[in-house]
Length: 391
Image (cartoon, rainbow, N blue to C red; front, side, top):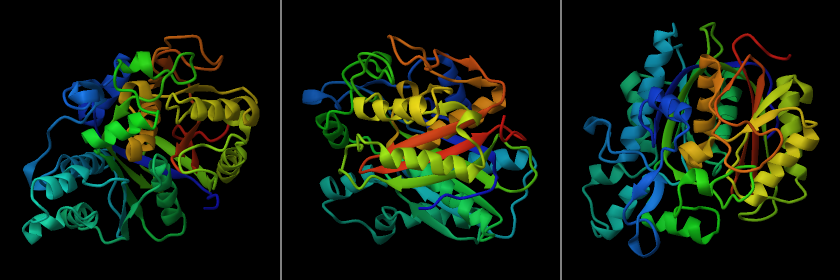
């Protein structure tokens, strides 16, 4: 995917995370510096309890039978209401993008293991990724393009970049973008542990230490996060200046240690945004706490960005929310601009010299949000506070 140009406003935010149902709970949770994870029985080795930032049961029955469908509709509805309260009026063509990787995995599990592969047709349709999209379009009477996007852990950035292209080309007047990943079944958790990347047998701040000594991997989480994006003059949370994506074409799980396409992606994102490396004040990193990803992103900060920006990762707090991870992290930056604070987690061990330690006051400045998806998906977007582009 080539780089894109021009500014787009994030004017509404909605969120369902391990902290609970609502963007306010996400912000309060991040600012508490306490992980969203709790011990959940039946997910660890031999059925033991595991540390998971799992979305609690909630939402409305009218939004579907599953936690996933209810979370998606709740987050989108909250973002739309939020945007309207800030003065947004939907245009004639509102598009919808839904980022998913393993949609309705709990319901598919139920379908095969409990229902014996048989359901009423109406209930079977609930398994289709088109169903929550269609229901949301019907609820609000939106008639722009609507589709799902998927780029593993980079899906959030991929959705934002796609939304921006739609807006830049005039295909739509506004976009509602939702990223949903409520896929923590015991089997999925087990296999990410077997891959050597997920850690569920210790508290997240102890196990997941992005850019610090002793990190064992990522804490696991779930989320559905929504944004309303528009070029209209409503006061935004943040402005999406530009972004880019590349692909390593190297390995099904590993980052190319040469980092060639990671660096190219970042440089293209800066170029698309009309900024230079010197303009980036913060890097909101993918930062899963794995050696290969942390090494790659530290290299970006040290070499591509000349060691200037400060960096942070909220994964020890919110968990790695897979297909919704980048969206959770963009929400952290957008809400951070609104509140004047970067909700960085506390450091627990010696680490990178530019790593932030705990919540940090912010005074403007541009943020580079990087996200590296499994299989070689590299993505980067540049965010600015309202009315600010380059320092």
